[in-house]
Length: 84
Image (cartoon, rainbow, N blue to C red; front, side, top):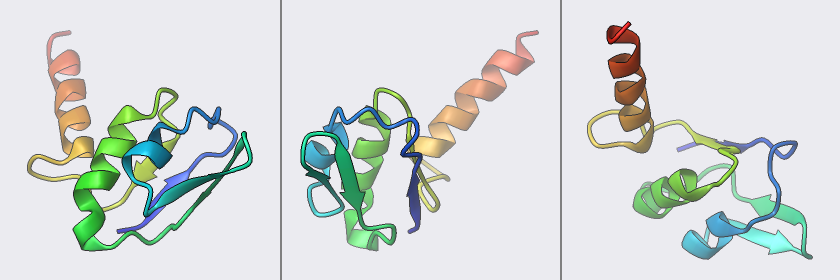
């Protein structure tokens, strides 16, 4: 899985580093470092980190689909657009 962090959005809340310490780490108080290529066995940790980011700065390819974080977000968006 490939992940991207928008470092312009990231505010250093470190929720991702707390939930997925094998993928994310804080360098100092404000600088985030991360592994852009997460392993399949890290899927659950990554999904929790993506969901927990208060500024939605993290996106990950491969989390969408049945039960995935991106899949749920897309489904809720469709419900909103269908209601119009």
